[in-house]
Length: 148
Image 1 (cartoon, rainbow, N blue to C red):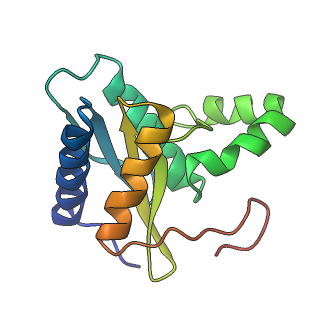
Image 2: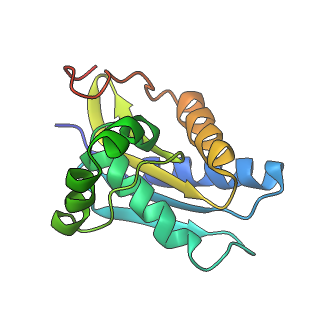
């Protein structure tokens, strides 16, 4: 089993914060391992107080659900009662929004990246651009299908 190293997490964090600066956004960024355990979180100057917690929830959700958080939306809306119960079982809330992307390499889930501070679309775009630039995979099977 491959693990996401602190050096890799820091590289992802640095790239994400640079992109936020380029957008003129004060972001918070969180990285968790495949089990949802926090590796690192950073809050840029001027980022709103709640953004680190939101970034952690997005990173956690994308790691333990093994799908980017935007892929969870249909499930959350089709079965809201069950989806809401997931958060009572988990260490952090499970969120179905943009800005949480699973970190995957060679078909293996390594962790999750969560970004908060921009619009949902900006948060998602930053995640995808940084992970693509660093060579991580962004292809995931639809929910309920085999892992892709």
